[in-house]
Image 1 (cartoon, one colour):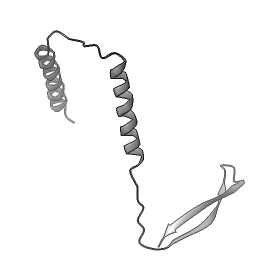
Image 2 (image 1 turned 90 degrees about the horizontal axis):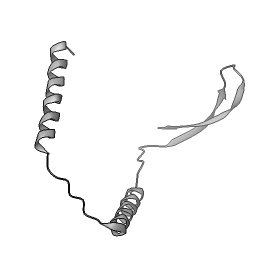
Image 3 (image 1 turned 90 degrees about the vertical axis):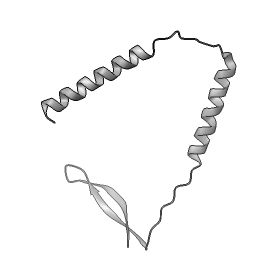
Image 4 (image 1 turned 60 degrees about the vertical axis):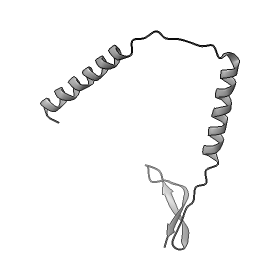
Amino acid sequence: MSTKTKFAAAALAVLTLGATAIASTSDAQAHGWGWGGFGVGIAAGALLGAAAASTPTYVVSTGFRRCHLVPRYNVYGYYIGAARVCSYY
């Protein structure tokens, strides 16, 4: 990335932030939702979480799956066990 491009990107970012700060100057108004708003937030989170967790994921393979054990060694060359490795054919 050249120096001119970096400078142009930085200038654009500064102008965008400045315009946003100037355009959004109004009085903030907070309305009290109390515990009802908290309950609605918890319920919405639970519903969205349940929907995301129940989405099925499928694994499609076009052939046979063959699994075998492969020996595992640590950095010193000592045998530490076997790992199951599966290949799709």
